[in-house]
Each structure stands twice: as structure tokens, then as C-alpha cells.
Length: 465
Image (tube, rainbow, N blue to C red):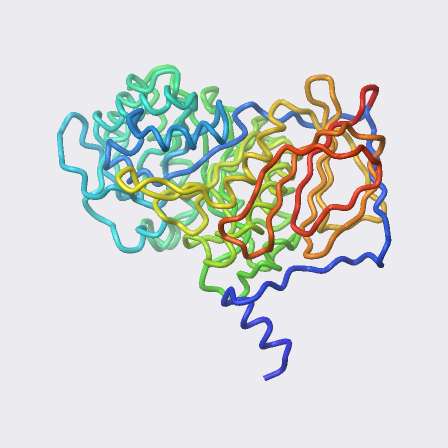
């Protein structure tokens, strides 16, 4: 076996890292500049989001104000984030209203989707504890309803209770999860975007009548952009639709030999669910519908994440850069999918045994520091796709973010002299699982600085810039 093939095989198994090395010669310095007069998108206050399987509501004790450790961890991500409930389990989770049943499990995550298909339910008791959880965290909810195995009347009954109980904590309803994947699964082979829109319209009419004033989001697609384009084309007919939504996974499935750390850091991973050309189609849908777009579900590697890739320090750096990259395009939020003990989940654990933060948690915290900031036009010379560089205006100050996604240091020259204090997201190695650190540091101000491997830095420029 050739050494190159052996390296790829070991990387795919998580044995070694094959992260990209720097394209710069030793001693080269990247010149960073920005234009304070050319502004872009502003990061929304609820940009940070988490996505959970709807089946988790089968246990009312999970999303509960009494689950104080989870409340604390969620609040630690953002004081005003977005909780999305849906996932593939959503199409198998029944609504039972005021009926009382014993919880069938303590937690439900992406790792359970293939093994548990029955016995999952949502009750008004779970909706009430969910409201308490949302009140305790300060978050709002993007709530997913069944489409594949429900009638419009059943969805309307649930929607009315969701609206009544969640009240102002309900941002919007989504009808169905990944409807672009229904064909040959829940619907006939010939079922397509037009059929989906007709079905969505029937559900929407019933829900809007049962829950007057409720808002909607959609189409919550997996990766077939013709469904998004079709939905955007008719969105103007529905004034209660407030955003477009879809999913994004950098790679997948988890078992793929191409789901590696070097692919995770690549600007366009070979197995990504959304190519760069697809991102431009999303942007066109935004313009067509005149509505914002939210990544309602996504993560590093679909099928629950990959050990040694999704649960390590490199994922924190990837996550911070991905959030800022999407925010720069004007997307209004990123909801990391997870829950249970999924390999890619930012928070894992159970109420009875406690919870743990994975590296992606810290990457999310880093990006959240820029909520409310407005992007400025930037340039980096020489350009490098593995160097994330962002300039933003926040509370009257200029923030500079530099993210080194390589396994070697990169030296940069900042536009002007920064302040002494900065925020640093770093770790000892790409594959470290429990050593990612997000710290506030002080150092002697200097325009030229070296960014260590797999490190993100947030600077504040001196007054006047």
C-alpha cells in the first residue's frame, strides 16, 4: 500500500490528522485591511441556535426549568438564542395533547434515530415545561410539526396548543422536516416540489385557521435546492411566512472515508450537502422571497457526527469560522443539531448523570461575542482560503477576527494597532477532545502577530478605527 493511501486510511479512521499546511513561505506576513465605509450584514441577536430532535419532548423533564444544568449551559451560549425542534424523529412523533404517558427515555439524540421509530410523543405537559425552559434561558423556539404522517387537522390541533402555551417564546412553526427527502420514502417516486407546495398549502390553511396570527418558516430542506427555490417563489402569497430555512452539513455520512479533518477545513468539502454554487442559489431565493434565511439544522458530519472529527478541537475552530462565514452572507442564524450523546452535539449528557460541553460549544461562544456587529469589507494579501478574516463594527468599536484553520502558525499584520486585551479560542492539537479553551488575555499591543495553529483571535482596534 502506498504511503499516501495509508495516510488517508488512518485519517479517515481518526488515527491521525491530515489538516492543510500553510501555503506561505516561512516568514511571510499576511496583510489585513478593511474599508470602514463599506458595510455588510449585521449579525442578529438570536443568531446562535441549537437544534434538537422533536422526539426529545417525549420526556417533559428534559426541556424544563428544573433541568438547571442544561439551562445554565444553554444560557452560556447566548442570552437570547434560538431553539429549533424537529429532525427526522419529528415525522414519527405523535401529538397526544392532555394525555399522560410515562417518558419512554431520558434523552433522544441523533444516535437514536435509526433504532427508535415508535413510542415517541408530545404532550401539553411537555409544552408547558418547554415554555418554562425557554423563559429560564431567554431563548425563542422554532417548532417543527409533522407532515409525512399527519393530517392538516392533526397539525392544526397541535399548533393551536403550541401557540397558546409557548406564547411569545414561539418564533415560528415549520411544517415537516426535510420534505425534499420524502420521495420514495414517505411519498411516491413522482412526488416533487409542486406536490410539496400543494400539501404545505393545505396544512398551512388548517393551522392558520386554528392558530390565528401564528408565524411560519420553511421549507426546512435537506439539500435539494429546487424545493427551496419553489417555496421562495410562492412565499409572497403567505404574509405569515417570516423566513426561509434549510439544513447544512459539511460532510457525511459519518462512515464515509472522506469525512476527515482536512475535508472539514476545506472551503468546499467533497461530500458537503451545500456546495458554494448552492449557496448562491440560497442567496437568490432570499432575494426572490424578500425573506431572511436561517440554517435551521446542521453540523460537521451528518449521521450523528464522526468520532475524532466532530468531537475534537478542530471542530470548534471550524464552527466559529462557519458561523461567521454564514453571518457575513446575511444568514440570520445557525442551529447546531445535537442532543443526546451525538458526536457532533455542543452539549451532551442527561439530567440524571449531568452534562458535558464538547469543543463546538466553545467555538459557538466565540462567534456569539459578535452578536449585533456589522461586517465591514475586508481584504487579505496574499489570500488564503484556510484563513478566516473578518472585520466588524460593534458598539462603536472595530473588531478584527482572525481564524487559522491550518496546523502551522500564520503571521498577520493587523490594519492598525490593537488594544492589549483580546479573546483567544485555542487548543493543544486538532484531535484534542477536552482541552479547547476560550480565554480573555492581555498582551503587549503589536500590529504584527502570529496566530498559532487551529486558533481564533478576536482583537479590538485602538480608538479611531
